[in-house]
Amino acid sequence: MSSLATAYTNSFTGPEGQEDMPYLLTPGPLTTSRGVKLAMLADWGSRDIEFRSIIANIRSDLLAIANAGDDYECVLMQGSGTFAIEAALGSFAPRGRTPKTLVVINGAYGQRAAKILDYIGGRAYQTINKGDSAAPSAAEVRQALEVNPKIEFVFVVHCETTSGIINPIDDIVAVCKQAGKRVMVDAMSSFGAVPLDMDGTDMDIMVSSSNKCIEGVPGFAYVLVKRSLLEASAGRAHSVVLDLYDQWQAMEANGQFRFTPPTHALVAFHTALKEFKAEGGVAERGKRYQTNKDVLVAGMRAMGFETLLGDEVSGPIIQTFLAPADSHFDFNRFYEALRARGYAIYPGKLTKAPSFRIGTIGRLDERVFRGVLEAIAEVLKEMNVTNMKP
Ligand SMILES: Cc1ncc(COP(=O)(O)O)c(C=O)c1O
Image 1 (cartoon, protein in one colour):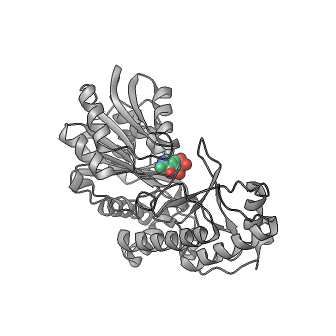
Image 2 (cartoon, rainbow, N blue to C red; image 1 turned 45 degrees about the horizontal axis):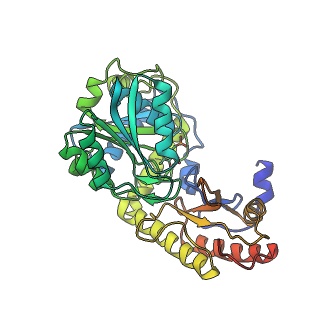
Image 3 (cartoon, rainbow, N blue to C red; image 1 turned 60 degrees about the vertical axis):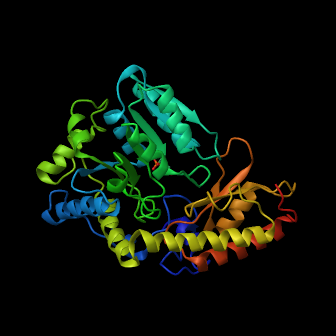
């Protein structure tokens, strides 16, 4: 056992085998079930028939969860979520020196997509930038498409994890499709907990990763995309490792990754998918996270904290709280004292207001959040913070 794990042994008791480490109240890596952890206690050969069938099952399960029909493919990509975002942008964002891509930004992940396009080069883009706490509207996207009819491709984030806001993705996708554009949705932190209907909305591309709402461990990400787009992307990638078309071709040919697969992460994810189905899929997982959120937000408000977002736009994924202006409040102390009690929270990422975030996803239930609230009350008392107003 690591010294960190030893330090936390018996410090608190969790429902699901997290008893010797803090709960991760973060948007991933997140707390996983004991079953998911146990699945990793085996070494798999990447060529094993059984392992290849695990890959095939993961790909078909993900398509089913996204309601992606026969016209769609699922390509798995080694690395974190950003690797798959970059792979998809390199493969599908149109080339050209005049902007043919619209990047809709309302936080760090929209910004990152723009940065990726800058690095790749040769794929000019324009943006709608809403700062880091306002949602973009379908009307704004429609207007941008009318002003520049040369736009062919729109990038938008589903849950912008910077604040936790849920963007009106169905409306935005509808506007793009009415105008005959292709849409790529970064559903990294929402997929599996907030409904997403690729077939029904005619969404072209969706990206998410292994260590989010399906509750697996980090190691790979996935791109769900219309087969016609994938076929047309042959030879377009800017990078060998991030060549989605090649990755897809290899998976189709022999059921394997081109390069060393993250075997443990894949078998863990396979178990996570079984647990996801047993729980009741997107509806039940979303409900559990929503309860986590409701308990947490109500308790924090009762203590006097203010949330960045109103309840109508904040999703069940992560909650942003404005830091108290009280001079005794010190985020680092607050964080360490909570961590010592078994709860790892998350720093804020807002450009303007000091804040902190508490993730409500992962193998956590309302009992954990009642514990979080008790620990927060205790720590604030210890720090002598009496006024929670920002
Ligand atoms: C919406 C969104 N997009 C992209 C990413 C990047 O994923 P990763 O950190 O796994 O590269 C994240 C990570 O939390 C995210 O929440």
